[in-house]
Image (cartoon, rainbow, N blue to C red; front, side, top):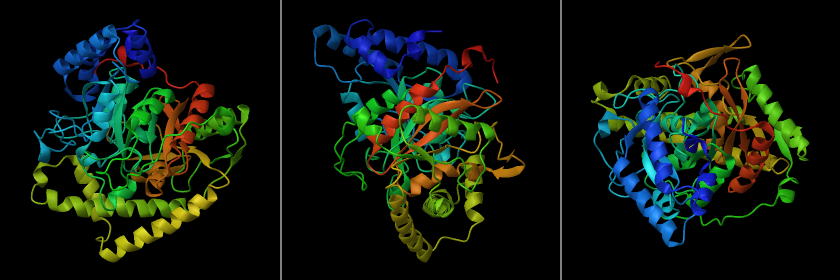
Length: 476
C-alpha cells in the first residue's frame, strides 16, 4: 500500500511546495492505486492517464523554477461524471448520453485547475443521478471499499468510493437530495453540500435550473474537513451561468467566535427512525462539542416532515416531469434503478402547475419559519441517514421493530436541500458490522465557513477518517 495515497490534499500540497514530494510521485502513486483497486470498486469510469502525467510534469517544472503555486498545486483529484470536463465522458450514467464528451471545463473545474490540481479521471454515478445506489447500464455497479457487497451510496457514489479508498485525494460531487452527504456517510469520508449558488453548478447535468435550482448543488468531497475547506475556497464564487449564484465573499471565522455559536441537535426527524449506533454518533458529536466549550442543547426544528414532502414534489414529481419527455419511447435503454425512480413518481398523482406553485410558495414560507428557529441555534447536528451503507439492491430495513423504506431512510438530508441550508458530513461512529456512520452539521444559508469550523471540531474530537479494509478484501 502506498501511504502517499492516504495523505490529505492539504499535506500533499505542503510537501510539494517544500519539495519533499514531487507532483509526479503523487500522480504516479494514485494512478497505480487506481489500476490495482478500481477493478474491484468500479469507482472511476474514465482515467485520463496521459494528461494527468503531462500535467504532473508541468507542475513539477513550476516547482523547480520557483513559479507562483496555487493552494492545491500538484494535488490529484477526481470529478463526478455529471460535471463537464473538456474531453471527458459527460454521460451522467445514462445510455441515452453514451459517448457524449465535454467540450469545455465547467467553471468550478477551471478554478480547480488554476489552483494547481491535477485531474485524474471521472467517477461513476447512477442514471440521471436519481438514486442512492450507484449502478447503471453503461458502466455497472460501484462497490463500497469497506464491504464490496454494499453500496457507497449515490449519486456521488463513485466519488466517495474513490476518495475513501485512496484512489483520489479529493473531488467534486453533486447533491439534490443527499447525493454528497449520504455517500460520504456510507464510506467514512467528509462532504459539503453548500448553499445553492455558493459554488457555481454551471456545467452540471442535469442542469440546476427552474425548481432544480432550489435543491441542486455541487460541492467538495474529501477525507478531512480541512481539505473540504480548501476545495470549497477554490471553487466558491459568483458565476453568471448559475441562476442561484451570488457574490458572497469568503470570510474567516476565529475559533473564539465559533465557540460562541449555540448548537442544537436531534436524533430523529420523525420520518424514519435511525439505528441505535446512528443516534449514538449524533450524541457523541454533541458531547464532543460540549467538551470543546460550545453550548449544545437538544433541539428538533419544526416542519421537517412537511419539508421532506415538498422536497419530493421538486426532486421526484417535477424531476419526473422534466425527464419523461427525454426517456419516453426509449425505455429499453433505461437501467433498473432509473426505472425504479420512475415507478416511485408514477405512484403519485401527476404534477400540475397548481401543485408546483403551491410547493414553491409553501417552501418559502417553511424556510422563513425554519431560519427563524435557527436564530437561537445557528448550527444543528443530525443523522445523515437512518441506516449505514446497505447491501446492493436492499430497499427496506427494520430499525427497532419499525420498517424503514428506501426513500424515507434518506430523509435527514433531503429536507436541507429544499430548505437551502449548507451541511457537512463528518465520520464519527461505526455500525455493528463495522460500517462508517457520519454526522451532519447544518448551518444557515451562506454560512459554510461556520459549518466547516464546527465540523472540524467534531472531527478533531471524534477521530475522523480511517482507512477502509479494501486492500484486504477479495473480489465480490
